[in-house]
Amino acid sequence: MKILVTGGAGYIGSHVVKALGQRGYEILVYDNLFTGHERAVLYGRLVKGDLSDKVFLDKVIKEFKPDAIMHFAAFIQVEESVREPLKYYRNNTVNTLNLLEVMRENRIKNLIFSSTAAVYGIPEKIPINEDAPLNPVNPYGFSKAAVERILTDLSQASDFNYVSLRYFNVAGADPEGKIGQAYKEATHLITRALKTAKGEFDKLQIFGTDYPTPDGTCIRDYIHVDDLAMAHLITLDYLLDKGKSNVFNCGYGYGYSVKEVVEAVKKITHIHFKAEEVGRRPGDSPVLVADSSRLKSELKWRPIHADLEYIIMTAWEWEKKL
Ligand code: UFG
Image 1 (cartoon, rainbow, N blue to C red):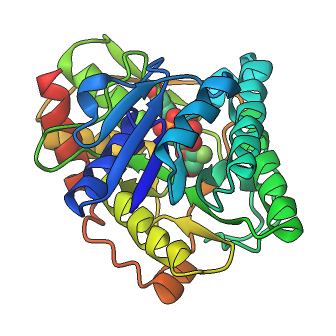
Image 2 (cartoon, rainbow, N blue to C red):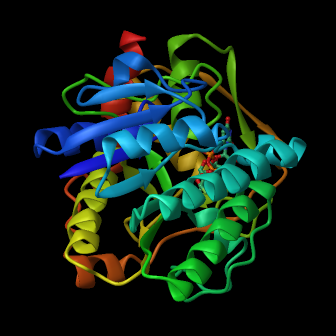
């Protein structure tokens, strides 16, 4: 079985490539290496290419003839998307259209799409289930929600099938220590806190302490990247087994505040770095916690790393090597 993975040299993509490789899939990674790394691709073949280059993408897909495509390639930073919306709509939305057109021309019918909890915006009900309305509050969330809409329309108009996985806050690293998040300008909380512990920054900023949450800081549902990788494998089985187009949340169903994460990072690293309380970061939703019962009941997803300290520990082991 052949799988083409866009963005397979990036953080989440590379963990999924490892899981696919261990299961014996034939893999082709298509990645422009803007934020990904060649050394992160542990299985399969890497082709350096951009999704804006439809001619090249078409050539690669014609030669490889994938049974399914997993589409990770995207920009992912909420705050940056507020400052540079066009960058996000171009790469996340327009480039996905390119991919879909090339898929259609080559009659590739199965797609797993990396979506995000950011499509929900500020949800009315916590935990959030997949039927909650999509009201993104930042361009990043909009750029992904737009793709979800396109996927729905396309699947209704043809025999194209997709699964959209809405990731909550993905963190942690490969327990074997071979891969992890290796993005220099990482802005994500756990990575940022670990880099501060390491001395790369003199302090961590806590963005916003006046949210309607018990300690005033934002709450997120942190999911270990390997549990997310497993969600992709079972989703792939589902799609290749002629499963219908669907959408699944990927999270554990409980959240931690920014302050709780900072304390946990200090505990795991034994380093008491400085954390400074500052104003809110634009585009942040106060609470994002997943109801993942659909993924558990329909696809039998069984996460095995649902523990914040374990997540931080694997990320710390990786971070120390960088
Ligand atoms: N935060 C800080 N200080 C930092 C970094 C982050 O206080 O230095 C706070 C943020 O303000 C936010 C929380 O920590 O309240 C989590 O922020 P991240 O940047 O780690 O992650 P986001 O929740 O903004 O976004 C991530 C992914 C999105 C996804 C979202 C879903 O990047 O793709 O989780 O929950 F949509």
